[in-house]
Image 1: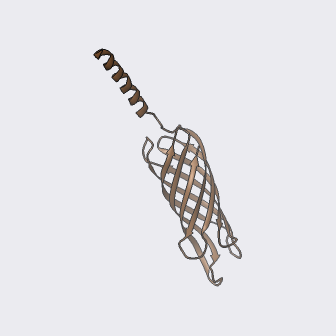
Image 2: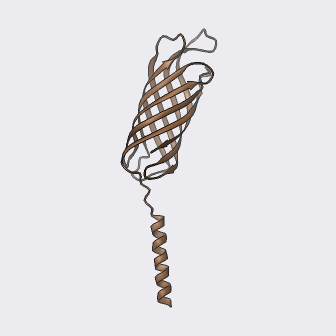
Image 3: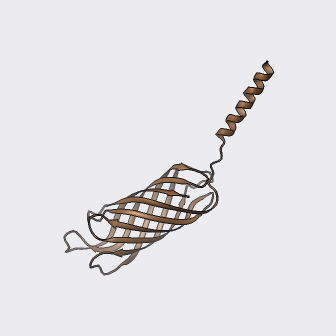
Length: 176
């Protein structure tokens, strides 16, 4: 009887250990994703945005995402639009999946604003995020980032030319 009990306990322990070591390490290779978010204008120029983005790239054990992105930033209080095109890198700085990550986006923004002298400008977006759920081929996350768009536009009073848009951006995304 003791021998059977020990065998059953050993078997259940092995099953439990196997369940706890489920390897959820993301696969290497092609990845793509989408994001939705909003940016709050920190300069007080009434240029807060609703943001949509599509991403395509590659992932490895150390780099969660390296690729390119294309987005649309729609200003909510006026008819201005911005279309950022950027290179992007995201990493948890570890081989195994971690909860937190850092990312950097850099590129250009094609801006559509009324009566402005320049339309193609620098676009930078450093940020940090938290993974909400991850799997071998799936990850959902939330990011908080600073967005700089070097666009030139007229302020609320229409008499001042503003150089540069500074925003705090919160985004929810998913990659496959």
